[in-house]
Image (tube, rainbow, N blue to C red):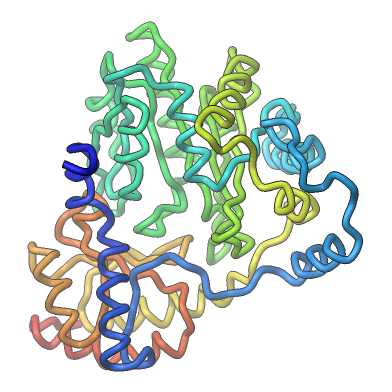
Length: 396
Protein backbone atom coordinates (compact mmCIF):
# COMPACT_ATOMS: atom_id res chain seq x y z
CA UNK A 1 0.00 0.00 0.00
CA UNK A 2 1.62 3.31 -1.08
CA UNK A 3 0.11 5.44 1.71
CA UNK A 4 -0.79 4.84 5.35
CA UNK A 5 -3.98 2.84 5.92
CA UNK A 6 -5.45 5.53 8.15
CA UNK A 7 -4.90 8.24 5.55
CA UNK A 8 -6.40 6.06 2.84
CA UNK A 9 -9.47 5.65 5.06
CA UNK A 10 -9.64 9.39 5.68
CA UNK A 11 -9.48 10.10 1.95
CA UNK A 12 -12.68 8.15 1.38
CA UNK A 13 -14.52 10.11 4.06
CA UNK A 14 -12.82 13.49 3.72
CA UNK A 15 -14.22 16.83 2.81
CA UNK A 16 -17.49 16.83 0.92
CA UNK A 17 -16.79 20.51 0.29
CA UNK A 18 -13.79 19.77 -1.91
CA UNK A 19 -15.51 16.81 -3.52
CA UNK A 20 -18.46 18.94 -4.63
CA UNK A 21 -16.16 21.74 -5.76
CA UNK A 22 -14.31 19.29 -8.00
CA UNK A 23 -17.65 18.13 -9.41
CA UNK A 24 -18.32 21.78 -10.20
CA UNK A 25 -15.08 22.01 -12.15
CA UNK A 26 -16.36 19.23 -14.43
CA UNK A 27 -19.76 20.85 -14.87
CA UNK A 28 -18.26 24.26 -15.65
CA UNK A 29 -16.32 22.74 -18.54
CA UNK A 30 -19.54 21.27 -19.92
CA UNK A 31 -22.06 24.06 -19.35
CA UNK A 32 -19.96 27.18 -18.77
CA UNK A 33 -19.21 28.95 -15.47
CA UNK A 34 -22.30 31.19 -15.65
CA UNK A 35 -24.64 28.17 -15.75
CA UNK A 36 -23.17 26.31 -12.79
CA UNK A 37 -24.23 27.46 -9.33
CA UNK A 38 -21.42 26.43 -7.03
CA UNK A 39 -22.28 27.01 -3.35
CA UNK A 40 -19.55 24.75 -1.98
CA UNK A 41 -16.42 26.66 -0.94
CA UNK A 42 -16.22 29.42 1.65
CA UNK A 43 -13.82 31.36 -0.58
CA UNK A 44 -14.67 35.10 -0.30
CA UNK A 45 -15.16 36.93 -3.59
CA UNK A 46 -14.87 40.37 -1.95
CA UNK A 47 -11.56 42.20 -2.01
CA UNK A 48 -9.48 43.16 1.04
CA UNK A 49 -9.98 46.68 2.46
CA UNK A 50 -8.26 49.50 0.59
CA UNK A 51 -5.95 50.00 3.59
CA UNK A 52 -4.48 46.56 2.90
CA UNK A 53 -3.60 47.46 -0.68
CA UNK A 54 -2.07 50.77 0.41
CA UNK A 55 0.04 48.95 2.99
CA UNK A 56 1.16 46.38 0.43
CA UNK A 57 2.29 49.07 -1.98
CA UNK A 58 4.09 50.93 0.80
CA UNK A 59 6.04 47.85 1.91
CA UNK A 60 6.86 46.85 -1.67
CA UNK A 61 8.12 50.33 -2.59
CA UNK A 62 10.14 50.83 0.59
CA UNK A 63 11.45 47.42 1.67
CA UNK A 64 13.09 47.42 5.09
CA UNK A 65 16.38 45.56 5.54
CA UNK A 66 15.82 42.12 7.03
CA UNK A 67 12.06 42.16 6.49
CA UNK A 68 12.05 38.57 5.20
CA UNK A 69 14.21 37.05 7.93
CA UNK A 70 13.13 34.83 10.81
CA UNK A 71 11.58 36.41 13.84
CA UNK A 72 10.43 34.95 17.16
CA UNK A 73 8.36 31.82 16.57
CA UNK A 74 5.51 33.66 18.28
CA UNK A 75 5.57 36.39 15.62
CA UNK A 76 6.51 40.06 15.56
CA UNK A 77 6.04 41.80 18.89
CA UNK A 78 4.43 44.82 17.23
CA UNK A 79 1.84 42.62 15.50
CA UNK A 80 1.04 40.78 18.71
CA UNK A 81 0.84 44.10 20.58
CA UNK A 82 -1.68 45.46 18.06
CA UNK A 83 -3.87 42.39 18.51
CA UNK A 84 -3.48 42.38 22.29
CA UNK A 85 -4.46 46.04 22.43
CA UNK A 86 -7.74 45.45 20.62
CA UNK A 87 -8.56 42.40 22.75
CA UNK A 88 -7.81 44.37 25.90
CA UNK A 89 -10.23 47.10 24.78
CA UNK A 90 -12.94 44.56 23.94
CA UNK A 91 -12.64 42.51 27.14
CA UNK A 92 -11.29 44.89 29.78
CA UNK A 93 -8.57 42.34 30.53
CA UNK A 94 -4.81 42.78 30.61
CA UNK A 95 -3.95 41.10 27.33
CA UNK A 96 -0.29 41.43 26.34
CA UNK A 97 1.89 40.17 23.47
CA UNK A 98 2.77 37.20 25.73
CA UNK A 99 -0.82 36.02 25.28
CA UNK A 100 -0.67 36.08 21.46
CA UNK A 101 0.97 33.66 19.02
CA UNK A 102 0.82 34.41 15.28
CA UNK A 103 -0.08 31.35 13.19
CA UNK A 104 -0.55 30.10 9.65
CA UNK A 105 -4.29 30.74 9.63
CA UNK A 106 -6.86 29.38 12.06
CA UNK A 107 -6.23 25.84 10.80
CA UNK A 108 -2.59 26.11 11.77
CA UNK A 109 -3.55 27.68 15.07
CA UNK A 110 -5.98 24.90 15.96
CA UNK A 111 -3.33 22.28 15.24
CA UNK A 112 -0.83 24.13 17.44
CA UNK A 113 -3.30 24.33 20.33
CA UNK A 114 -4.43 20.71 20.06
CA UNK A 115 -0.83 19.49 19.77
CA UNK A 116 -0.01 21.39 22.95
CA UNK A 117 -3.02 20.26 24.99
CA UNK A 118 -3.93 16.70 23.98
CA UNK A 119 -2.64 13.50 25.52
CA UNK A 120 -3.22 10.32 23.49
CA UNK A 121 -6.87 9.22 23.55
CA UNK A 122 -8.24 12.42 25.04
CA UNK A 123 -11.48 13.89 23.73
CA UNK A 124 -12.40 17.10 21.96
CA UNK A 125 -16.12 17.72 22.53
CA UNK A 126 -17.71 19.52 19.58
CA UNK A 127 -21.32 20.69 19.11
CA UNK A 128 -22.84 19.57 15.80
CA UNK A 129 -22.80 20.66 13.07
CA UNK A 130 -19.10 21.53 12.89
CA UNK A 131 -16.32 22.19 10.40
CA UNK A 132 -15.33 18.73 9.21
CA UNK A 133 -11.58 19.29 9.47
CA UNK A 134 -11.83 19.38 13.28
CA UNK A 135 -11.98 15.59 13.24
CA UNK A 136 -8.71 15.32 11.36
CA UNK A 137 -7.03 18.03 13.42
CA UNK A 138 -7.83 16.15 16.63
CA UNK A 139 -6.58 12.88 15.13
CA UNK A 140 -3.33 14.59 14.10
CA UNK A 141 -2.43 14.84 17.78
CA UNK A 142 -3.77 11.61 19.21
CA UNK A 143 -7.18 12.94 20.18
CA UNK A 144 -10.66 12.12 19.02
CA UNK A 145 -13.80 14.12 18.39
CA UNK A 146 -16.86 13.55 20.55
CA UNK A 147 -19.97 15.00 18.93
CA UNK A 148 -22.77 16.54 20.98
CA UNK A 149 -26.17 17.52 19.58
CA UNK A 150 -27.43 21.09 19.51
CA UNK A 151 -31.02 22.32 19.61
CA UNK A 152 -33.26 22.99 16.62
CA UNK A 153 -31.88 26.53 16.58
CA UNK A 154 -28.31 25.09 16.56
CA UNK A 155 -27.57 26.68 19.93
CA UNK A 156 -25.66 24.45 22.37
CA UNK A 157 -27.77 22.00 24.37
CA UNK A 158 -26.31 22.43 27.85
CA UNK A 159 -27.73 19.17 29.19
CA UNK A 160 -26.27 17.23 26.27
CA UNK A 161 -22.96 19.04 26.69
CA UNK A 162 -22.79 18.16 30.38
CA UNK A 163 -23.44 14.48 29.62
CA UNK A 164 -20.75 14.49 26.93
CA UNK A 165 -18.00 15.76 29.24
CA UNK A 166 -16.19 12.97 31.06
CA UNK A 167 -12.80 11.90 32.42
CA UNK A 168 -11.24 11.88 28.94
CA UNK A 169 -12.46 15.37 28.01
CA UNK A 170 -9.60 17.78 27.51
CA UNK A 171 -11.13 20.37 25.18
CA UNK A 172 -14.53 21.78 24.23
CA UNK A 173 -14.28 23.29 20.76
CA UNK A 174 -16.87 25.83 19.62
CA UNK A 175 -17.20 27.92 16.47
CA UNK A 176 -19.23 31.14 16.64
CA UNK A 177 -20.34 32.56 14.25
CA UNK A 178 -20.74 29.00 13.16
CA UNK A 179 -19.73 27.25 9.97
CA UNK A 180 -22.07 25.87 8.58
CA UNK A 181 -25.12 27.45 10.29
CA UNK A 182 -24.21 31.12 10.74
CA UNK A 183 -25.49 30.94 14.34
CA UNK A 184 -23.87 33.20 16.96
CA UNK A 185 -23.66 32.00 20.57
CA UNK A 186 -25.04 34.57 23.00
CA UNK A 187 -23.33 35.90 26.11
CA UNK A 188 -25.89 33.99 28.20
CA UNK A 189 -24.99 30.71 26.49
CA UNK A 190 -21.26 31.34 26.93
CA UNK A 191 -21.74 32.19 30.60
CA UNK A 192 -23.71 28.98 31.10
CA UNK A 193 -20.96 26.98 29.38
CA UNK A 194 -18.42 28.69 31.64
CA UNK A 195 -20.33 27.67 34.76
CA UNK A 196 -20.68 24.13 33.45
CA UNK A 197 -16.95 23.82 32.75
CA UNK A 198 -16.10 25.17 36.21
CA UNK A 199 -18.37 22.53 37.72
CA UNK A 200 -16.96 19.67 35.61
CA UNK A 201 -13.36 20.70 36.32
CA UNK A 202 -14.03 20.45 40.06
CA UNK A 203 -15.74 17.08 39.63
CA UNK A 204 -12.99 15.64 37.44
CA UNK A 205 -10.01 17.36 39.09
CA UNK A 206 -8.50 18.48 35.79
CA UNK A 207 -8.66 21.58 33.57
CA UNK A 208 -10.94 21.58 30.54
CA UNK A 209 -10.05 24.15 27.92
CA UNK A 210 -12.61 25.93 25.76
CA UNK A 211 -11.25 26.71 22.30
CA UNK A 212 -13.27 29.28 20.38
CA UNK A 213 -12.66 29.16 16.63
CA UNK A 214 -13.58 32.67 15.44
CA UNK A 215 -12.63 33.47 11.83
CA UNK A 216 -16.12 34.90 11.21
CA UNK A 217 -16.30 37.07 14.36
CA UNK A 218 -16.45 40.30 12.34
CA UNK A 219 -18.89 38.96 9.73
CA UNK A 220 -22.15 39.60 11.61
CA UNK A 221 -25.48 41.20 10.74
CA UNK A 222 -28.46 43.09 12.12
CA UNK A 223 -26.59 44.69 15.00
CA UNK A 224 -25.48 41.35 16.45
CA UNK A 225 -22.28 41.38 18.50
CA UNK A 226 -20.06 38.38 19.14
CA UNK A 227 -19.38 38.24 22.90
CA UNK A 228 -15.84 37.40 23.96
CA UNK A 229 -15.30 34.01 25.56
CA UNK A 230 -12.65 35.69 27.73
CA UNK A 231 -15.40 37.42 29.70
CA UNK A 232 -17.37 34.24 30.38
CA UNK A 233 -15.03 31.23 30.40
CA UNK A 234 -11.83 31.25 32.44
CA UNK A 235 -9.87 28.52 30.65
CA UNK A 236 -10.59 29.88 27.18
CA UNK A 237 -8.41 30.22 24.11
CA UNK A 238 -9.34 32.10 20.93
CA UNK A 239 -8.09 30.85 17.59
CA UNK A 240 -8.87 32.99 14.58
CA UNK A 241 -7.63 34.25 11.23
CA UNK A 242 -7.94 37.17 8.85
CA UNK A 243 -9.14 34.90 6.04
CA UNK A 244 -12.70 36.19 6.24
CA UNK A 245 -12.69 39.56 7.99
CA UNK A 246 -9.94 40.94 5.72
CA UNK A 247 -10.65 38.55 2.79
CA UNK A 248 -7.16 37.04 2.91
CA UNK A 249 -7.74 33.25 2.91
CA UNK A 250 -4.80 32.51 0.63
CA UNK A 251 -2.34 34.39 2.82
CA UNK A 252 -2.79 32.01 5.78
CA UNK A 253 -2.50 34.53 8.59
CA UNK A 254 -4.10 34.07 12.00
CA UNK A 255 -3.36 33.97 15.69
CA UNK A 256 -3.94 32.26 19.02
CA UNK A 257 -5.02 34.39 21.99
CA UNK A 258 -4.76 33.06 25.56
CA UNK A 259 -7.17 34.28 28.22
CA UNK A 260 -4.93 36.05 30.78
CA UNK A 261 -7.11 34.58 33.56
CA UNK A 262 -5.76 31.09 32.85
CA UNK A 263 -3.57 30.02 35.76
CA UNK A 264 -0.80 28.59 33.57
CA UNK A 265 -1.04 31.11 30.73
CA UNK A 266 2.75 31.51 30.54
CA UNK A 267 3.25 27.75 30.19
CA UNK A 268 0.57 27.56 27.49
CA UNK A 269 2.33 30.34 25.60
CA UNK A 270 5.62 28.42 25.74
CA UNK A 271 3.86 25.27 24.55
CA UNK A 272 2.17 27.05 21.64
CA UNK A 273 5.44 28.67 20.54
CA UNK A 274 7.24 25.31 20.70
CA UNK A 275 4.52 23.50 18.72
CA UNK A 276 4.28 26.31 16.18
CA UNK A 277 7.95 25.63 15.45
CA UNK A 278 8.04 21.84 15.64
CA UNK A 279 4.89 21.26 13.58
CA UNK A 280 6.85 22.90 10.79
CA UNK A 281 5.01 26.20 10.63
CA UNK A 282 8.07 27.84 12.28
CA UNK A 283 6.37 31.23 12.20
CA UNK A 284 3.49 32.97 10.46
CA UNK A 285 4.45 34.66 7.14
CA UNK A 286 6.56 37.74 7.82
CA UNK A 287 5.21 40.05 5.12
CA UNK A 288 1.55 39.46 5.97
CA UNK A 289 2.20 39.90 9.70
CA UNK A 290 3.50 43.37 8.92
CA UNK A 291 0.53 44.14 6.70
CA UNK A 292 -2.17 43.14 9.19
CA UNK A 293 -0.55 44.95 12.14
CA UNK A 294 -2.34 48.27 11.49
CA UNK A 295 -5.55 46.61 10.24
CA UNK A 296 -6.91 45.13 13.47
CA UNK A 297 -9.93 47.44 13.41
CA UNK A 298 -10.59 46.98 9.69
CA UNK A 299 -12.96 44.54 8.01
CA UNK A 300 -14.57 43.95 4.65
CA UNK A 301 -17.95 45.51 3.88
CA UNK A 302 -20.39 43.05 5.50
CA UNK A 303 -23.33 44.73 3.77
CA UNK A 304 -22.41 42.82 0.62
CA UNK A 305 -22.75 39.55 2.53
CA UNK A 306 -25.96 40.68 4.22
CA UNK A 307 -27.55 41.44 0.84
CA UNK A 308 -26.66 37.94 -0.39
CA UNK A 309 -27.91 36.34 2.82
CA UNK A 310 -31.25 38.14 2.59
CA UNK A 311 -31.70 37.30 -1.08
CA UNK A 312 -31.14 33.59 -0.56
CA UNK A 313 -32.85 33.29 2.82
CA UNK A 314 -36.00 35.07 1.67
CA UNK A 315 -36.17 33.06 -1.55
CA UNK A 316 -35.59 29.67 0.07
CA UNK A 317 -38.01 30.21 2.92
CA UNK A 318 -40.51 31.52 0.37
CA UNK A 319 -40.18 28.19 -1.46
CA UNK A 320 -40.85 26.26 1.74
CA UNK A 321 -37.36 25.35 2.89
CA UNK A 322 -36.83 25.25 6.67
CA UNK A 323 -33.88 27.55 7.43
CA UNK A 324 -32.53 29.08 10.65
CA UNK A 325 -31.66 32.67 9.74
CA UNK A 326 -27.89 33.21 10.03
CA UNK A 327 -26.65 35.96 12.34
CA UNK A 328 -23.11 35.82 10.99
CA UNK A 329 -20.61 34.12 8.65
CA UNK A 330 -21.72 33.54 5.04
CA UNK A 331 -23.53 30.22 5.11
CA UNK A 332 -27.08 28.90 5.16
CA UNK A 333 -27.83 25.45 6.55
CA UNK A 334 -31.36 24.48 5.44
CA UNK A 335 -33.09 21.25 6.34
CA UNK A 336 -33.47 18.83 3.44
CA UNK A 337 -37.03 17.93 2.45
CA UNK A 338 -35.94 14.27 2.75
CA UNK A 339 -33.81 12.59 5.42
CA UNK A 340 -31.13 11.42 2.97
CA UNK A 341 -29.04 14.55 2.44
CA UNK A 342 -26.69 12.76 0.03
CA UNK A 343 -29.58 11.87 -2.26
CA UNK A 344 -30.92 15.43 -2.03
CA UNK A 345 -27.54 16.94 -2.97
CA UNK A 346 -27.28 14.55 -5.92
CA UNK A 347 -30.78 15.62 -7.02
CA UNK A 348 -29.72 19.27 -6.93
CA UNK A 349 -26.94 18.54 -9.42
CA UNK A 350 -29.61 17.98 -12.09
CA UNK A 351 -30.04 21.75 -12.04
CA UNK A 352 -26.31 22.47 -11.77
CA UNK A 353 -26.75 23.37 -8.11
CA UNK A 354 -23.69 22.34 -6.11
CA UNK A 355 -24.49 22.00 -2.42
CA UNK A 356 -22.69 20.28 0.46
CA UNK A 357 -24.55 17.57 2.44
CA UNK A 358 -24.97 18.11 6.16
CA UNK A 359 -23.39 14.71 6.77
CA UNK A 360 -20.07 16.37 5.94
CA UNK A 361 -20.58 18.54 9.04
CA UNK A 362 -21.82 15.82 11.38
CA UNK A 363 -25.52 16.64 10.83
CA UNK A 364 -27.55 14.41 8.51
CA UNK A 365 -30.68 15.73 6.86
CA UNK A 366 -29.35 19.23 6.11
CA UNK A 367 -27.29 20.91 3.41
CA UNK A 368 -24.89 23.86 3.38
CA UNK A 369 -24.93 26.83 1.05
CA UNK A 370 -21.92 29.16 0.94
CA UNK A 371 -23.05 32.53 -0.42
CA UNK A 372 -19.73 34.37 -0.59
CA UNK A 373 -19.77 34.48 -4.40
CA UNK A 374 -20.83 37.07 -6.97
CA UNK A 375 -24.44 38.09 -6.31
CA UNK A 376 -25.36 37.64 -9.98
CA UNK A 377 -24.62 33.91 -9.69
CA UNK A 378 -27.03 33.79 -6.75
CA UNK A 379 -29.70 35.59 -8.79
CA UNK A 380 -29.15 33.22 -11.71
CA UNK A 381 -29.53 30.23 -9.39
CA UNK A 382 -32.97 31.13 -8.04
CA UNK A 383 -34.96 29.38 -10.82
CA UNK A 384 -32.88 26.23 -10.21
CA UNK A 385 -33.87 26.29 -6.52
CA UNK A 386 -37.50 26.70 -7.61
CA UNK A 387 -37.24 23.58 -9.78
CA UNK A 388 -35.59 21.67 -6.95
CA UNK A 389 -38.33 22.71 -4.50
CA UNK A 390 -40.98 21.66 -7.00
CA UNK A 391 -39.43 18.18 -7.23
CA UNK A 392 -40.16 17.72 -3.53
CA UNK A 393 -43.55 19.47 -3.52
CA UNK A 394 -42.38 22.12 -1.07
CA UNK A 395 -44.85 24.85 -0.20
CA UNK A 396 -44.27 28.12 1.60
